[in-house]
Length: 326
Image (cartoon, helix red, strand yellow):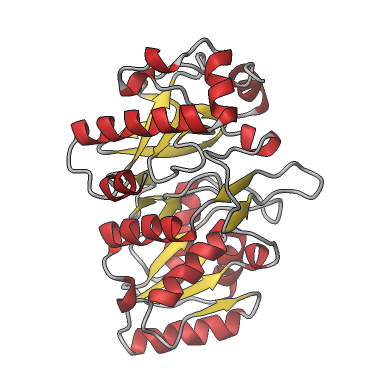
């Protein structure tokens, strides 16, 4: 599959994307027992899939109950989802760490340029306190690419972060701050600055630490605290190998080997991608040795050239979308 790996990161058209998706589907149908069993359970045989819209999407909940692997391998990385103690966690087995890094760095360069030019700061206390976080691995990978000596993590030492940001602003250093939502809000209650060149990435995650806020209200608070014109975000998860990015409007765009599709809320098998508002399906062709076709539990709305992420399905909607189990 090395030639397919090379091809995936050089797709230049919709026709290329569909051809690659069909090849990946065939590879995963043959080599992934869980995905093949799911396809057969819903009445889909390999030879029936002729177009991208024919490809079934595996419910993301399977990562909590099954080992979703394409081919047999000893993983170089294992990612685990965050969650409340006692809850089942998703586990994603990564065959090749280098494939993850390729996807991450190619995607970052596609949207933001060369990571060597940036300083990366991380206000991610809850993620640092858990093991096997894909977000922490992503930030560490970017830090290792950076030429800056100022990269660093911050737990609850907000004054140190504030002083570091002022220092980087005065140096006119390109800087990205990754922050979990509740920690960014804690910081915003104590400190204000005017750093319009700063890129702030809000990664989500109230986790019961604060009252939930609508995005517009949250972003207004953070923009005021940091003196920035917009708040950025990335749409990724431990079950994926790639990320979509929002450059400040909560509208997510994907790199060429990834696509966000919308399925009907009433039909979990809808593959038409014709809904204007619906549940997000993800095609992540870099996720070769896991599953590239994942049905999430997130609501989205088509907006211009991207997808606006509206939030999670509620329990009633989830019951309607998860009627199909092995």
